[in-house]
Image (tube, rainbow, N blue to C red; front, side, top):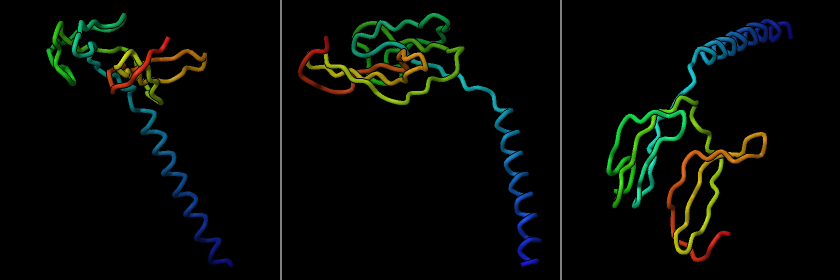
Length: 124
């Protein structure tokens, strides 16, 4: 039994050092900001949201081509959006997906909205 006690103390100290180094490195990591393409094909008309700066334009952006208008790449000053779930809506035959999450107040925070499929019906 004396042999096991001698081994367990160095292992616990070693584990504590690893945890402390991990916490220190994580605390030095800056928050990540994301650039976001705004404008949904085929009728894009992309515009940056308040607090964002436009840094590029494109007919394709990050996906399907625009039939009218263009997509804009917007630089966000806020940390990246945490898309924890997807809400869907049906508009005639077009299904729209909205990735985002609920804030502690119960308000929905949308990260991205896009056409994700076909459906039949309407959301009122």
